[in-house]
Image (tube, rainbow, N blue to C red; front, side, top):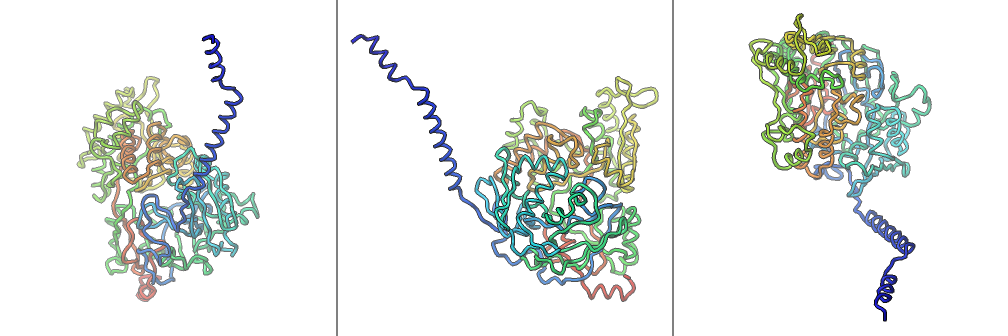
Length: 637
């Protein structure tokens, strides 16, 4: 046999027909898809009465009530509190105007948060939820007895409608982020609703995000769609399913909510011992001075205090001396809000980190605290101050790995240095000379040099102008010495105090250089970080006042959201904390680890208040006999 011919026959025999190959590939893909579908079908479905971000829920199925409530708390009486400023809407989701205090309180969500275990939620409008281990989707089973305040049932259609209207008419930054992550919501039946999650995003916090969506009445909105929009101000709050309904709203004067006697959920285990007031009244005042005088006169009777001068000096009136008014401090187990003077990074002058560091150095916390705040505050450095999520020392372990993976996206010194700390200043005078000299040198290096008139200009002759926007006399008092320090450095700094409506509008449009603001941080941070620090909507997000956009920050937020364990979460948060602090876009100010609360001695509270909420609105109650005694003695009207 000819060897060449034999070899040719062998090659021809082994050659694959293209049509056969394509068919085989298609069959393989079909089999692989079928196997994947089967695996999904066989995936364990979890059905539960609540959801925990990590670990197990504290409270079992059918629990009687939360540990921190008083299940025997009496119902009745009135909670009266204050608000400073103005309001022109009872729609809390409006893009225009200013919403009234507590205007979102009559809306409920599918899940309710526990106050004594971070990241844990229990069924409210939903009696249970179902989801696969992959958390690719979640189904909520609504309570059939759930009703809106007009007596109509809460249905799956209402939940889907609520989700969609927030995407269509809600804040742009919220809508764009949620639409990408939650592509579909559907009603599977009258009391069964399913949310689908995008495969392109981590699963963590998806369930709690949809579980926290407020539920609106579809019928109410659709009865007059032109005048009942989420994005427009209106004094008619709409129909909710919560324990309180609006009784009256006198614009810029007061708002009164009354308990709904037909509230459907009053006997639920998650509501036992809660919502104890018959009425909640909010009195409006033009400024905090007037509000303080109103409290002294008994115009309202409970006051969470955030003004150190008031706390130190303004509670020496007769009612306090006689024991009619109580000054209390309640420990706060939450991460303190990351407060400070925020620079608008969309402004070219703040693009140079040397300018931002100079802005930080001009603030003297020690003098401010001792001279203006009675030494009551502590200086904040970390975005997760005094928590396991705060960066400390040199990076190591998982935190170091995450930072190294960012390569040249971060300053290499972050890997070899301790985290940026708030600078120390001398308390003897408003301006610390050493810090001011260092700040001025940084401005020189950044090209902002001092001219003959003592003011700093860049190479184009443009002055270094910084407008500090404020809406409160309290913050004005604090900022004025800071502005004076900046002017000493040659910065054309001004403090512009505007009315509340203008401040709200300019803040939304990012028409400011610097403002006083705070980022609410959590022990179990998740997708909310995209809103605060992410690039996605940085130019217009009201939750990202700095306009921060940085790929390294985005990557670290991704790591936090992808975390599978609490330790992994904490390591990733420490890495993000370290990078955020190094960006120097916030002048860190002060914080407290307690809540200051003053109240007329007719309020009572549970013995075991939870660590993560004071419970003023829903756990406290009125002692009717003590209230009557105060009125009988002439202390209260």
